[in-house]
Image (cartoon, rainbow over all chains, first blue to last red; front, top):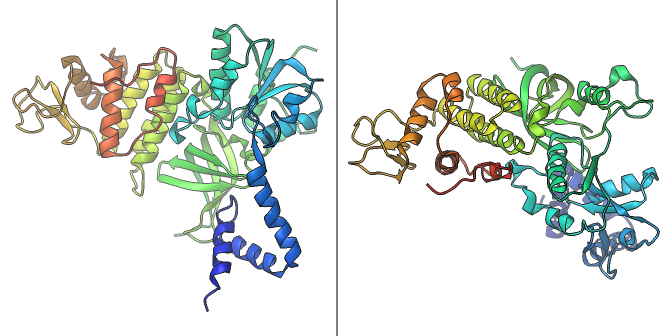
Length: 198
Length: 247
């Protein structure tokens, strides 16, 4: 038996989403088919609104509504405008905001350097970062602690040093509440080499 | 005989994080190249944090069926090379890993390519001249994969040196009479003969002539015979790094 073409199209489109294989796509398609029509249409409308109503902030490249001039973080006058935190993805911004420890501005790179995948400095928002350094006292490099993130941070660190801007790297260490014996060797090694005096 | 659980040692040559938090890693082992998925490998604190790019790891993997994508269940770190993140070395480490990846597409190359990649990455980690290490090991990787250019005699007439032309398509040097390919300086031809016929140690001790010419030859040669290497132009990322100039 052949599925109707509308269902085949839906399965194919769902299967293109990250982390969704053909079986999951089929299961999701049938789930949607069994839901009340208004709920499914609400989902469709949300997707449509997200596609047409979201864009990148012109300052920091965070996600924002298309009708805003700049994102809510850049627009917030209560923030410390002398500190800039460089992150890889908008999701990292939300994670740092949840920590409640940081009140400065952000800059989203939208990736990390990966020459073998064709991602060099020109594919990231590094040029824009360098253009917004006036008045910035410190740049915190909060890229991932992977080799790619580390290389990106070191590359940026060099560019910032050439421009006389103070740069710092987020600390490495053990997760809060974690047992030492279960920590991986790299994290443990970094935690020891970047220890701080009490 | 197929075994569901396997333990193998290898180097992570590619690592791709999925939005689900899983990581798909491409690992080059002595037995060849294979891929596996580390469930929730991006979450800090798990034992899969060792699965970083260029890490030498011993991995326990599980497959229900032989053709399934392996699930990486445990990872033990054998050696991390922290200097590979440095801006002047990172693009070169990418170059070696990308070349090893391209050379092992759908073929089994035995353990030598793994050993050359491991030696190359270790060399990059500790050398004061990483660009030279990268050039030497790129040519050696090509050689162990069977893609080395012929450099002892003219590709076309069999004449001995001097061989001042490099024929990309033919895959080797050519004499003045045949004049096939790009003209190259005599020192570059000498470099190639030594890099491809003498032990690696001698190649590493040799101060290579024009680096930009070597990088350009590598780019064009790999582009024709193996694959376009996306990380090769990026070696210019390194401050003071040679740009792949036209020969």
